[in-house]
Length: 80
Image (cartoon, rainbow, N blue to C red; front, top):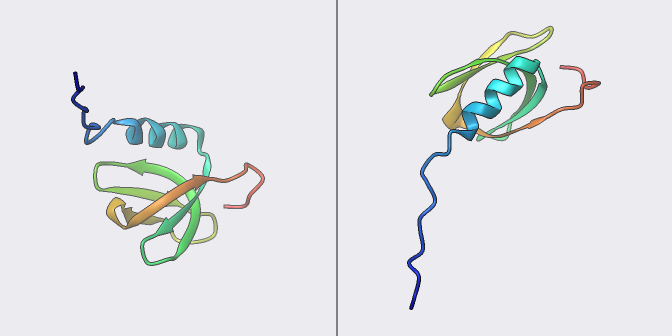
């Protein structure tokens, strides 16, 4: 008998958990935007459509999530 393959869920809610953990720990992150720019900072706040990137010595930014290609955690020793 052939087994029917199940589809992956559209959302797992893991993004929310991960962003909450980053914000709670004030973990420095790098953010790659869809236009190729890279930014660094700390995720201070987020909701369904955007995240706030707090930066030291530079203006804080509200980034629309659909413009974020990916983000990664930086070493604690990295300057933000």
